[in-house]
Length: 368
Ligand code: ADP
Ligand code: MG
Image: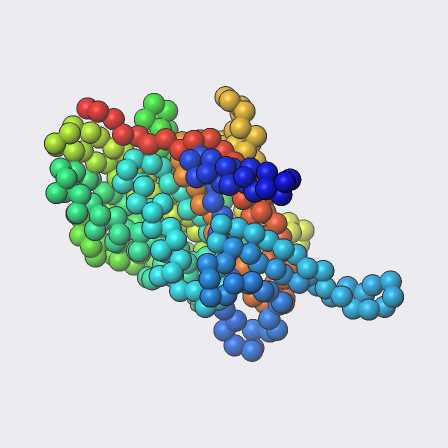
């Protein structure tokens, strides 16, 4: 009887979750490319063919008191787990509805979290990743919605948050290096703007490809200054969608944010000097601030303080994280034994996020 009650409670809980704007978490494990990368860790997925939600990871070897060598199993459960064989196409299918909801006036935020080399950029910002796939789908849907009287203005921006400063990935090389930008919030419309930022009209299916190229060219210039800059900065692709229906007079205003976070590997300030040390402290600070914001949202106190202002990233995403928005995090996992400790740390962080339930998503759609 208890088991039955528990299962009813669970299923009710799941339905409520559907309605709430809680944070969804999916895990993706990248493939091992070749043996020179080192040994594979022991990761298992119970339902390789089916839509798996579970992942088990065997920890580092430990000697028991009897002298046996054992590995402690760690079980994880997320909204979905993608194994090494999964393609970006399959990953996109899981998020396509969420992406679509930005056209309905929701603020949507999708993150990739994980250590450097775990597959964040491959998933998010590559030519085959979520950014071009999401943009193409939105363009196509908006075109189809014309029949129903909707016209959309679609604008893309692409920023890098590096050392607590915002850089315009779509600006000229000089602007990218030198121009200063500020974050401004419109608390009534629950919308955010960044001053002086380039905006590219997404008025043709190919527009997103030129955005990605421009961003890559700015990044490669920056790479000569600081080798690993792209793994030490966050990049945020911002797609603003303002719709108007000439038949019904409805308006809608939604934003899709696609975020490729800085590498989550623990960085130690000791030993690092000057610029490197500042960089390290800023990454640690902004990632832990993201965790704090999610934690504070989870406490669900009406009107409670959420520390968005503690980092540029969370301040930028203030209206796309939390009660009125839809959030999804991909936790990226490396399949290698050498990365095992970091992988477990990432999966534990993701579990905390997964257990966070926040308020109801609300869309900005109004009768004019
Ligand atoms: P990160 O951005 O987390 O540092 P990358 O996305 O750059 O990691 O991934 C590291 C390397 O692995 C890149 O060469 C990338 O193309 C490749 N890679 C990552 N994930 C996959 C995957 N699922 N399938 C094929 N190649 C991948
Ligand atoms: Mg990367």
